[in-house]
Image 1: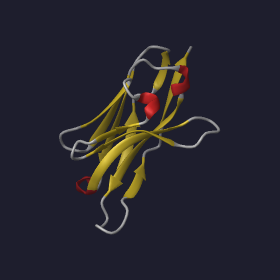
Image 2: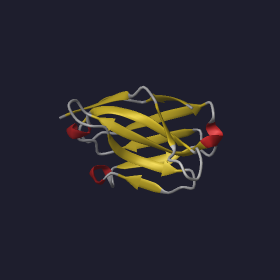
Image 3: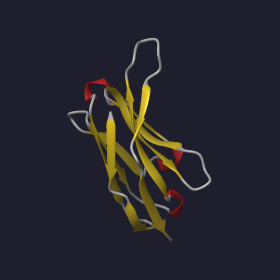
Image 4: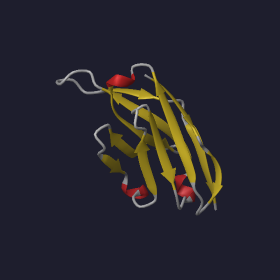
Length: 120
């Protein structure tokens, strides 16, 4: 699975951005997609994840501000980011999990990342 993200950029605090990520390749094997972020000097953290069945998970630090959604074709994932804060500044990475087998963990696939900068 190949992933290509877009939509990052510079925004003022309180503003909004929408990230998009398109998947190609073995799309039928995708079981979930999500967004992670990594600020300089920090580890990569989960922001939001959505399963193809519709279940959503959010990190506590974005609950109520960010919304994740998936295309009907299950080949794209979106992250609507509202009420952005300077601490949301990071490189955001698109992730796709692909099913391997019932007894093995899913494979992770990553996009190249898109920079989000929130100015105060």
